[in-house]
Image (cartoon, rainbow over all chains, first blue to last red; front, side, top):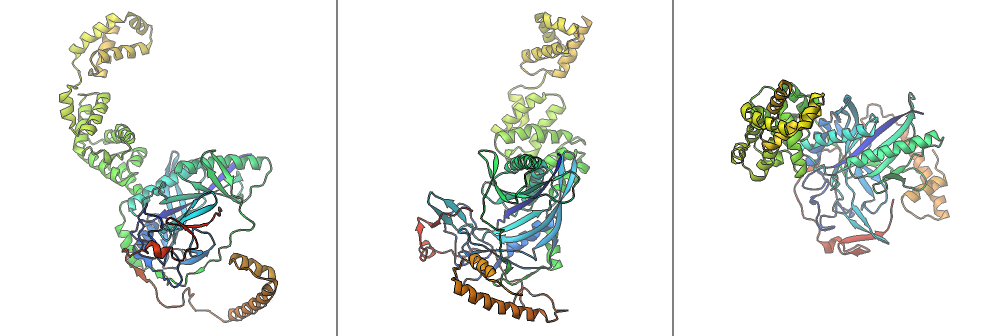
Amino acid sequence: MSYEVVIGLEVHLQLKTRTKAFCGCSTEFGAEPNSQVCPVCLGFPGSLPVFNLTALDYGIKVALALNCTIQEHTKFDRKNYFYPDLPKAYQISQYDLPLSKNGHIDVELKQGPKRVGITRVHMEEDAGKLIHQDDYSCVDYNRTGIPLLEIVSEPDIRSPEEAYQYLVTLKSIIAYLDVSDCDMEKGSLRCDANISLRPAGQIELGTKTELKNLNSFKAVKDALNFEIMRQTQALDGGVKILQETRLWDEKVQQTISMRTKEGAQDYRYFPEPDLPEIKITQEKINEVKSSLPELPHEKMLRFTKEYGLSVYDAGILVYSKADASYAEECMKAYFSKDKKAVANWFNGALLSEANARNSSLSGLKVAAANLIELIGYVDREEISNLTAKVVLTEMIDTKKTAGTIIKEKSLIQISDTGALDKIARQIIEENPKSVADFKTGKNNALMFLVGQVMRKSGGKANPKVVQEVLKGRLTNA
Amino acid sequence: MSIDKKTVEYMAHLARINLGDKELEKLSTQLDSILDFIDTLKKVSIEGVPPTSHALPINNVLREDSLAASLPAEKTFSNAPSRKNNFFTVPKVIE
């Protein structure tokens, strides 16, 4: 049977405040275990939490960037459960009056843009870290009390690929706001996925499973793909899906049931009496709104309009804020009206250099003027694309300009027909078989001959001119 | 609204409290009368009364994001039933 996949994602985001949500302990990553704790975050009796102003501002920022409605009144609630990572035996979270609701983001997919709803963005505190040993567990409370945002999507996502793109888009937006490290490896961004299947055309939702232990965006995609296969097989075989939490096992590439004990979770939420409610005025909202930077989606649309880029090219350029402003600087410096060449460099040669060096595009430190100088040589057909890539590598390694490198290595392309004709004649004489092949209509033979001329010229021949010269000789001969 | 022994048992489990049979009986009766009282409260007309989530009419008590001293290790662990180096240790529970 054919099924429709229904996915909703829950993202937990650590905010990069200097101090924790409710006390002045540092949030610095990687400190000695339990060195950043105090009576408040350890839940000692008689201690009193006070909320961090910056965490609230960051929360409002994210909520607004995700097009959510900020609630005028918001409050904290206690979510009660016993687990050693939670010293108070409750987590301060938000229940019925979350910071914000009803947002959305626009995700660019191959088949076009898609709007994914955001159910809510609420504030809460992080739990501690457990390190399991053979017969006991070690607890580190440094992470306890770090401010988190929980970002819950609507079940609008229809495939693992969409889930992946949603996360990429969300991460890009949050990185623009500069309110979180968004580092999955350090756990500052975490994701759980809910997934169910329903027969195509059915309105009622199927039974969902919740997937945890997803340590990368790729793991989210892989786990969802596995779960679609597992649920499809179960449903086809008439087996009921159990509503349960399943852990993704990276090694075996499978989700595994967490056999939790009887009964659903009962968190007994109630209002946190230690924290008075928070009122957020329209002035405050306006103030934060006006401080928001241009966000990736707006920037992408502007790039398509101002620089004539395709949605695809612009989409890649705007992913990171620093790279986008570097790209824009280059496009502005570029002499031609058509900026496509610059985008091609960014999404081609520059990107592969960045990947090879594990750097960002702007991290390559090629000044805009220098990059444009290099592109100029290619545009004027003074060097080939291939040579230009070699020059770029050298520019990054030596910090020399394109002009210097090209001069030093005398890389200027030979476009002089007379000079190339000489080499062409020689190559034709040396390769009678290819010449014969060409005459029987084998186009590959021409490319082979072009290659030979290029080689003989030490890569400096202008391949376009070479092709013309060769063609001329072969067809007239 | 009435509360049966089973519900009290369930709540005791959630709160990790061990209750004997006699205590369960006693608490069921007591909780029953508390809930009765809540039922009485429910009869009060609250039309036009704004919902309250906090006992005090104050809001926006916030602090600046500035560092304060954390506890030194000897204080952090002074009441810990068990520790290993700078970790608290607990029986292994995997959920």
